[in-house]
Length: 308
Length: 177
Image: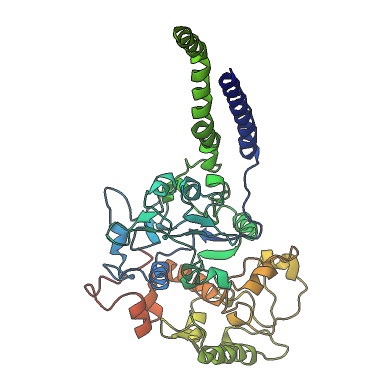
């Protein structure tokens, strides 16, 4: 009998535990969307200014000590390169690339620089189960190769397909991505190397809130020049790197189907249940099982006692 | 871009020329007052200085196409006039007197914070030069690739990884194309 009481106590305890866990876990999901660190830094890219000189690519290569390119940085034949029908992308040898887009109805092509957009709520960060990623208060999304296990979930999670994997190194494989020149420049109050190298000042460096003001001023005061949209203000829940363009964004290779809320929001509700399922459910259902088989066991016990 | 002491001196000289040369009291400066040759070497590092034939350019375009104002004459840009209708005569026409060769440093970022400041989007000196020159060069089919105006220095060649040279001529491209 004593044994049975203990079992009941255990069951009651586990049910109470499940209830508490459900309530406490429900809290973070109700928290409002993270609007980004106050005073965080960003960059506003103006596509109408970029002339495709690739100085930013050269600057990045030097600053981040990346391998030498196959072609010099002032070779513009790279704009015609296609890999599997796609234009160039950042990879393990380059954190940023500039691509050329012919826009129907425009005399001159547009050039678009691609690099990590440094999301306010990065999908790579939330997808990483060893916390290899950090969103710093300055605004950079940085990566720690020491804890990375190489699962590459971040590469799947990123809505902009930015993190690249160094497959070429058998002994030091790691994620390679733009880190906003965090350690060498951003923390010292300097703009990233690409921004400083740009002759056209196609990139404006500043506080994200100020950049939104600057972007809106540029759109307003050059009526008809720009599409009335700042890409990255809301895309993927907001990004530190934002863009204004004189042509529709999809024509310049932007993915305009990227959701306007953090990617995290799509999995937040589901993910908050995972710990509960993993910890509470085994105990709970084991309890149910024991409860359901209790009568049988008691009868068995009685029978055994009778036999003795 | 590194600022070496030489560049600072050059900047000072450039500013002085801008201030002294065309300033004839009581007369608005015009293209006849224009200085002949300007060597733009303030930012020279990866590229050699630009020897800019200023006088020749004054025959191609009116002053206001490049300068917001001349000394002594009011800016006629309707957007500027909104605030500057009664502003004092400008003392300098040099780009570098307003556009800083050092851009995006922390103090500047704090200045942008000022809610009463209109000029929150002022390009730096490098940006001002290129944003002013390149569109016109493209439009008039003047050289618009980087080395059309300034040749690469050895540092610049290294920077662009020109050492293991691809076919010469292949590197030449124009933004106008």
